[in-house]
Length: 374
Length: 229
Image (tube, rainbow over all chains, first blue to last red; front, side, top):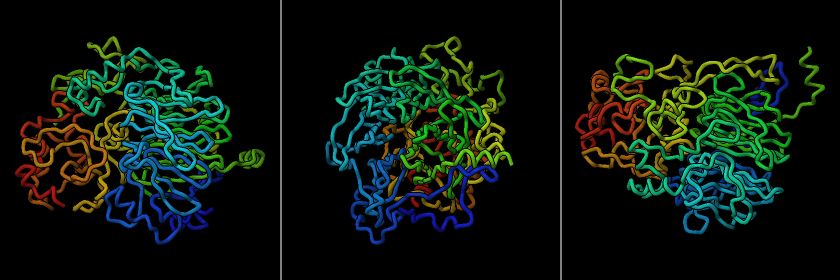
């Protein structure tokens, strides 16, 4: 399937690739997804649906503010839209867009943030304002929700290890990765666990904050997160923002204000950490979304560098791609990312209101070595 | 305007960044903060990324080495200036996106990324500076994720050019009132002082009676024509 959009943005002779020649090209820019017309079908009938969701006087549904992206298979790209309050589906087979989690159902979403999938047709949505994770089935039907205000403070991402029956939820205000099983029971917590969630919620209510999000408490100068759970040691977090599971079951956690990504095994044992504070290659300043491809490469979105950095399975930096801007292959405060089994890389380009799409290009190692030695 | 600092970390209004929620090095919420500061030993690095950090060289582009990454420009740090989009607001927004801190921006569905009357691409701050007609300018801290009331949005990123609209005071008057412009532009830090909670929430001057609004807008929220574009 081809990407109609961005065909005008680049001609056949000037591909956007990284690294630049003479290094072998490893990443190629593919295009962008913003609205239904980017799927290539004319005359969309979704005009009414679009206005119902966005209020726009437009005959086309389009992304407002993407937080995360997930590609279930080659045909469907899911976009978590925090401003529209729904998950938008780009169906590349039917060339149409749909809505998941709209108002008026058990699966209604408030402010969807991170997306995850189990590779078996289920989509998981971390709903920040509802303090829960919502699960949808292969036909985009609502299945279940778990978590809730008594368990989650600020769920911002979800990743699934279906083989191990582990659903990882990054809660950036609990400073934990809370691990559920498919029955919705908490089986493990990664990170410090000394803060009192119930007391924090009572504090927010006492401050007159009906949203229970601690907004009024913040206005008065107190933190909205469980400060006692912040930590800098291996296995502790300071605002865990994203989770991703590698093919071998390794869990990666984007540990935002520790400026690192941590790796854990299936039992939750810390393996190693990647990155440190700085502005040089291999440093992280605002690590946000992370993803792992089928070869085990780790992709880290950085909202300060406005790029992605690629690391191998031992934490060695391979390369970076992307830069700040509004054009092709550029990013503006990016957030979530996902790499599908074909090596297609999707990035929620948040302030450009679009999904940027790149392609990982496996290169024969012998050919690459030959080029490097020339 | 910000007077010269008297001591490291000490700001002239008497409150230090270590005593605010922007001191992200705290691992427990107890004053004083000094014995609680962890690892990086300082509160500044969470916003002011230090240059360097070693060199974990990229393996796949040894032939085209890259230097430090280009970052946002900042009025307070001597960093590389980017073309559009740029500005100190990018630093604020990199945390104020709902994952680390309050989501500062909501794209109102009726007016997605419109060109401003000044012809520039701007964003709008959904954290209320106005309360939609309240002349006292009181703050409304309800999180609004999906808002159609443009009076609750304040634009940032545009050049402050009062010559285009007589309902705005001069740039000199704005700065004399205590607000800052960055390269002539309005940014988050025009109204917000990220290091001090003297005027909550992180304001440069008091907003009693809407005085922050009045620093730029002549006549107050109800009378200014700037709100109806």
